[in-house]
Amino acid sequence: MADAFPGDDQTTVAELRRNMAAFVEERQWRHFHSPKNISMALAVEAAELLEHFQWMDSEESRRLGDDPEKLAAVAEEIADVVGYSFAIANELGIDLSQTIRAKMIKNAEKYPAEQFRGKHQLGQDGKPIG
Image (cartoon, rainbow, N blue to C red):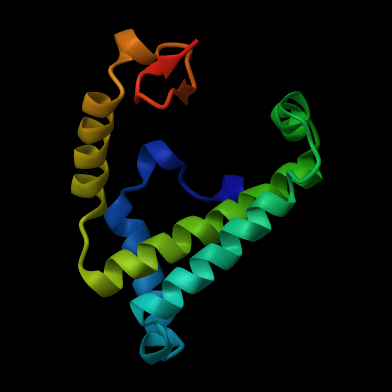
């Protein structure tokens, strides 16, 4: 069914945000959508996503895409997480594209590729280990 919709390369963030806003508005749910409530719902959905990977090792998690049923279930949880992210951005008036770009710049400064390439841990001194 997902293939019936335009893909990432044909859909804008603004369009998805408008879809979420319309969904909330049609149901008259905005009064429930305080930033506190949405952030709590987002945490619940993130935990539901995590549940699909519980007790798997890293390689098993990479092969999850081999099982269409499991992949569809994970995709639905990701959609819930992203959907709530759009909802809270809508409620607070946050421009996601600008915010994500700014955060990526900040992360690139904090974790320079030449220092962190292939490394995943920091020592007590804040320097990469490994």
